[in-house]
Each structure stands twice: as structure tokens, then as C-alpha cells.
Length: 151
Image 1 (cartoon, rainbow, N blue to C red):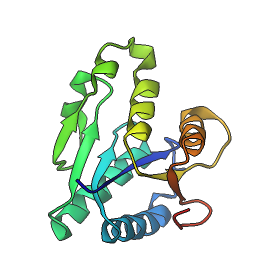
Image 2: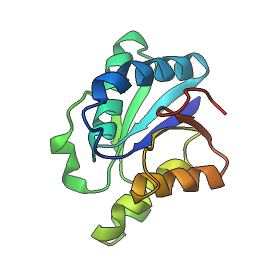
Image 3: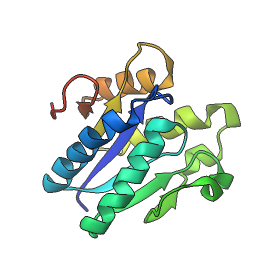
């Protein structure tokens, strides 16, 4: 297995999805060329959905990649809007109380990822908190809103 990349960002892109999309796509292509073959995606906000769509579209150009949706809740599959490769729901999320599922899912995803692509604009909220967690673990983070380079 190659490397895994996941995505975290604020739920509301404030009408900037069309500006973010080309940069996000290029970052994903660069990561694929540098050994990423699995993308963990979510379905809980505009950044999640944008990341999922781009990853699924790239699968047509790079059939070797996998797009895996990491679920928080069992009924989420019916709402997904892209052609993912597979899905998973880690056991620790299944056993968690509903109000803790997203936080547990996000931590699990960071723990199991080599790269994190982030779109963080504010120093508040769950996206910012998981970005801090990824920094604490010294994950390689690509920050779209500041500079698109792998640290």
C-alpha cells in the first residue's frame, strides 16, 4: 500500500469553491505523483464534498487510486455524491455516542493518514482543532489557504 491523504476544512467555503478547486486538484495530482494512492474523504461540509468530487474525478485519470469514504454514521452512504472506491466505519466510531462520532472519526483519519490537505480560515471549530491535532502528530500538511507546499 502506498500513502494515504485526507482532507479537513471549514464546512462553509463562503462561495470560494471555484477558486479553491483548481489548487486542490493540483495538490492531489502532485500527491499522487509522490506516492499517494488512497484518499480518505468525508461528507460533512463543502470542503469535504469538494475534495470527494475531485478525488473521484481523478480516479478516471489515475485508476490505481482509491477513494475511501470514512463514515461517521451508518446511514450516510445514501447521501454520498461521488463514485467512491469503498467505505469504512472504524469500530471505535461505531461504539461512540452520536455527539462524539465526528471528532472520533477525524482523529482516526489523521492517525491513519500520511498527508493532510487543509482549508482552515479561522482559529475556531472542529476543522481547526483537527488541524492542530495533525500538527501535534507532525503530519505532513498542505494548507490551501496560505501556501500549497508539503512541509
